[in-house]
Image (cartoon, rainbow, N blue to C red; front, side, top):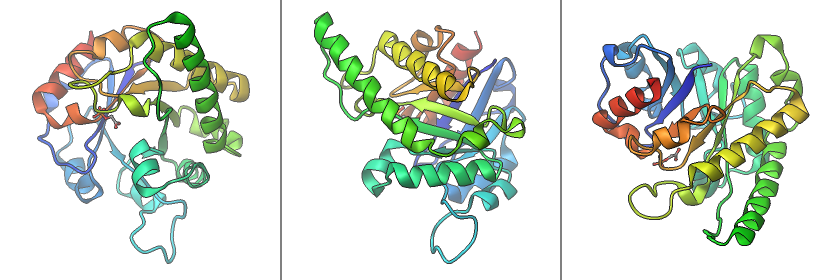
Length: 255
Ligand code: PGA
C-alpha cells in the first residue's frame, strides 16, 4: 500500500505545489480551511485528494455554523480529520462527540482520519520507567480508540467502505516540537502504531487499516518514521505551510 501523507493547514493558508511534484507511489491529502476547499479543489494537482479538518455529527438541520458531512462530500471532499487534539483541547470535543462524528462521516462516504494520542508522557531514559510510561500510554490510547469507534463495527466492516478508516497516532506532547522540545522517537512511535494495529485487528479484523504518525513531522525527520513498514504515513501540520518542505516531504516519502 502507498504511504499516505496528510497536509493539515489548520487555520492557515499556504502556497500550493505544482502538479509534476506529486506523481509516484504516494497518496497525498491536503486539508485547507473550509473557506478554501473549493478553491483548492479547482487548482489541485491530479495526485492530490481533498480533506476537511472537521465535520459535524448531523447532516442537515438547525445547527448554526456547523459543517455537514454530506455537504462536504458533495463538494468533492474525500477525507475528514476527526478528533484532532486541538479540537479536543480548545473546543472541548469529547470522545462521545467524536464517536458521533465518526459514525455520520463514514455513513456519508467520507474517509475518516481519526486522531488519537496521549496528552503527556514523561521522557525517561531509564528503561524501566520508559516501559511503564509506554504501558500507561497504551491503556490511554486503547480507551480513546474504543470510545471513538463505539458502534462503528458495521460501518468499518462494510465492504463498500473498505479502507475508509485511517488512524493518526499523534502524541499531543510531541506536536509542534521539531524545533524546540522533545519530539517522539521513531521507535516509540513504532511501538504505539504496532499496538494500535494489533487492537484494530483483534477487535475489527482490519489488519490493513492505515495508521499514520503525526507530531512534528518535517522533511528532516520523516524518513526516520516512514522507513518502518508499519508506519503507513504521516499527518503533517506546521511543515505543510512551506512549499519547499512539502516538496521535500513528498520526495522523501516516494523513495
Ligand atoms: P505539527 O502538527 O506537525 O505542527 O506538529 C501536527 C498536527 O497537529 O496534526
